Length: 263
Image (cartoon, rainbow, N blue to C red):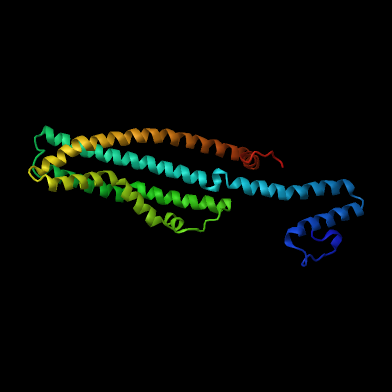
């Protein structure tokens, strides 16, 4: 209707593209007034003027919205950090508990502690490969991609780091390695000390995991508690944002920018 007021096709090929909407609006409003529809022309002009403002508010707000991806990505990173801290703490607790049991059974010398620690670490690796943690990473990345597509966010990687982060195998391998980092570092350090203090090699592993391993696990649990509080805050913010979107997404996007709605 606004492109051919009165059925007359006007060519704007020689007019810059940013000026064409205003010229079409003026031609349409002039046509309405010409045929005696002045009240309707005023309403049409207000609606056509509000269109670009509305589009600007929605596009700018989407970059700050939870559906824009940044808040979801931050929440995902927080969930991943919490799970990695908890997994490493539990693995170190299991290793330390096993060494306490060997001490109680008076089997904490020789190669027994090292063999038990390596067996437990092998179990951790198998559980990490077969467990739901790495599959959860893949599922969230797929969900994140869907949200970006629905929100119109540009999903093309802009740097080498973005390419790595968008690769599912690389992310799964990274999460897998980080979930085993605590016990792996502990075994490497104690293995080095075992070579240095070869007089009683088994006792080095047992005493190290029994003291240092349990201490590290308690520290990780304390850090986990602190990060969990932050995660709960971010989850509450995300839930509140989703509730506001269900009520009125345009008003929510305008409020993020400190604007009123309708513009």
